[in-house]
Every structure is written in structure tokens, then in C-alpha cells.
Length: 520
Ligand code: BLA
Image 1: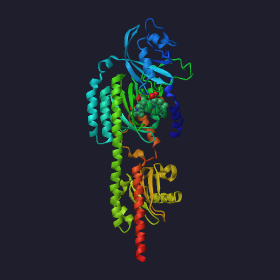
Image 2: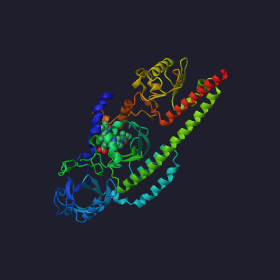
Image 3: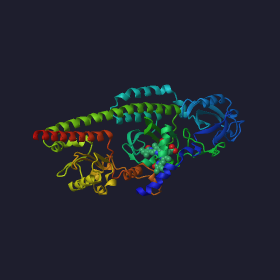
Image 4: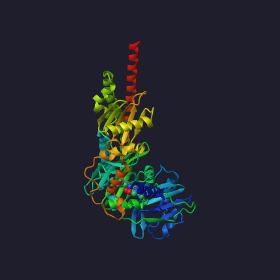
């Protein structure tokens, strides 16, 4: 299954989603060039306005079509406050169908100025004031310090984002080191199924999309049933390049993803990037069963909330790491004290199995020397551990620490015991003879607590070939991807193991010195 997946994934990663050349139909786009702000691109849905040239005014000066807006647009284009689309104001255009209100936003794309006119929906017009949102934002910020864990923090965010946007479901998910994702928190009305704890593979949000989401924090798809509106012409005449829509609000999204949404039974989405120290930490993903627009003010409020959340998150994660180091330090101190008392320090380790396992957050451990092999917790069988020991001693002689989260990739016989030892952390505790303390972690799939079997629910469209594009199918693909892999050993854990090694060597050395002193 994995080898079939590979070409599809690279195709996904290669789709140039920032230059697809179309917008979603809930607004229209113009691109301006030069000091006279000539219209060099227009989406095919510029409304007809009495007395105006048709075709979006391509080739005309912007001032000719929009005399009232030209000065402001010219000023903003010359002095953009920041990267990314910036709201200018709400404008009413006299179209042949009557007056229409639009939220006008501007951003720069290379040498071009991009203007996006987003239709103001009637729903939006009713609840748009920031004042109305203020008490909510205020309560959110006030509540943040009370969250004790990252999970609780994410829970607060999910509740508020869902409330502000009115979506059926809001998820907060985090990427792991390999860009697989886990849903950490969720708030919903029950209209859509729960995806809490759902894991999904790196391929569901391909690399270029993640990079784009790092640079542009928010995106909306008000109606997954939309027909993309092409932007003319396909390339900018002066450069011959396609229009870069990276910072666009109306950008038409990848058709693959639209298919994914339909398969999920969701007709509208919004997602907001969660950035920590400039890197993409995770996403908020909101869905509605039916099409849904989110007013600009509400989107801005979500972006604001998410940035405050991210600051708090960074602090909480640093705190959690410090706490973990402290806890590991305490375990280490206990082990050290008993090793110092015991005649044979290995016996001391074996007498405190819970501490030994906790030191590396492992499910099993072994102490192996030339003449003994002792097992703690969930481990491979003794002969399997002996064979692994022989391989380690031969493959990595003299190395102090050995770490892997996919042992069978380096040591094929380990394929027989991935359920106990997909991950191995080993420290060598003697410089003379091969002696190790080994910690084991099971295959990550076996550590996942899943409430109910996600594969049991029928996927939409079975057999169409598109059923791959479904989060429930994603879970199976994720399971394939993480087969025979354990959760990665974190830096604090590896450090604790190294510290233990140093202590053991110190004790051994001191004992040797004591012995030498006695025999003098
Ligand atoms: C984009 N995929 C996305 C987005 C999400 C997901 C949230 C951001 C766009 C949005 O806000 O709707 C995925 N959403 C999920 C997942 C869950 C969820 C996993 O709620 C689970 C709970 N997608 C695939 C495959 C491809 C793919 C196989 O599954 C490869 C061709 C592509 N996903 C894909 C692309 C985008 C995307 C190209 C970018 C869409 C865009 O911005 O143009």
C-alpha cells in the first residue's frame, strides 16, 4: 500500500496551488500595474456597471472605473502596512442589478497590486461590529491563564472560534515532527461527526499547502460546490508569469481538497494557521454541513484570538518541558540514591522498575551485560533481546547512546516484535564490556487510544476511487505510514538517559577507585 501511495503524494505536493488562476465566486479580483494603475488581470465575474467597459475593464486605468477609490488604493499600494491582504473599507458599487456592498481588500503580489472585492452577505451585515465581539475576546484572554494543559488551552480556542463563526464544528489540531496531524480539541453542535483524537497522514495537507498556510494564516471556502471563476489573462502580459495568489482571500482552492471536503460531508470550511516561533504548529479547522459565509470582522477576530492563543501555547509548552525535566530529574535522583546504596547498582535499577520505565517514558526496559539479561515491563522475549544486544554491540561498538523510533528499518529481525520494541533507546554503561540499559516503546498505532473504530463508519462514495479522500480513510493511511514506528524520544528523555549513563559510569569509577585504595 505504501509504494502505491508514493507517486500520488508527490503529485499532491507538486500541485501549484498558489497560481491556479481562478477565484471563488463570492467576490471578484482585479490586478493593477504601473503608476497609472492599469487593470492587467480581472476575474470573469466583475459585475456589470452602467456606463463601464465590459470584461472587468482590462487594459483600462483603475481610476476610469473606480474614480472614488483610486486615490486611496494608490496610497495603500505605495505604503502597504504589512504583507498580506489588508482591508480598506466597505464600498457600494452601482451595478446593473442594483447597489452591491463589498469588503475591499488590497495586497501586493510582486509588482502588481491585487484588489479583492468580497460580497458582504446580509448575515454578515447584521453581526459585523467588533464591539459585539469584544466581550467574547476579553473573556477568552482572561480565561487563558486558567488552562492547565495544552489540551485545555486548545479546548478553549475550539469553543470560542466555533462560537464566533457559528460553524457546526471547530477542530484544533497539531502537526507532529513528520507533519502527521492529531485532533487535540473539538467543539461542535453534533450536526457533524466528532473527529476528536483522529490522526491523519502528512499527505492530507501537502507540503506546499503547509508552506502557504505559514505565510497566509487564514482561508475560507464558503461553498465547496462552487464553480471556480477564471482570471484573465492566464499570465501577466508584462512578465509572462501566472498571477501569484498566495496572499489572496478569494483564491480558488485545490480541486483535490474540494473533493475531500465533499467526501467529508462538509460544504464550507475555514482554517486558521497556528504559528509558534514562525513555524506551523497546527491548524484550526472549521466546517459546516451547508455552505456558510464568515464575515470579515469575525475572521479577523479569529485570527486575533489564534495569535494570542499561540503566544500562550509557546509559554505553556516551554513550561511543560521544564516540568518534564524536573520530574525526570527527581526520578533520576531516586535511582541514583539507591544505586549508591546497593552493592550491585544493576540490582538497584531492577528493584525500581517503575522509575526506570518512567525515566524514558517507555513501556519496557532491559539491563543486559555479558552475563545477565533482565527484563522490565513490556519487552521482546529474552532471546530476542539477547540477539538485539549482540547486534548493538557489533554494530555500534563504543557508542554511548543509541536511539531509533523505527528499529526494524535498521535491524530487520525487529519486525517480529514491533508491538513491544519499535522504538529503542539504549545507553552503554560500561566502557570495557558491552553492557546496556535498553528502553522500548511499542508501535505508535498500538498506543493510540481510539474511541470506537473509525474504519467501521461507511465512507461516502465507496469504490469511486475518491474514498481515499476522506478523514476516515486517512486514519487507515496514517496507520500504514506509522507502522513499525514508535513515538519519538524527546530531547528531555534522551538527556535523562544520558545523565543516568554518566551517573552509572561515575559510580562504577568510584567503586573501582575504592577497590584500588583498599588493595593498596
Ligand atoms: C488542504 N486539507 C487541507 C486543509 C485541511 C485539510 C484542513 C486546509 C483547507 C481548509 O481549510 O479546508 C485536511 N481537514 C483536513 C483533515 C481533517 C480536516 C485531514 O478537517 C481531519 C479532521 N488532500 C488529500 C490528498 C491530497 C490533498 C490525498 O487528502 C493530495 C492531492 C490535498 N489538501 C490538499 C491540498 C490542500 C489541502 C492541495 C490545499 C488547498 C488549498 O488551499 O488550495
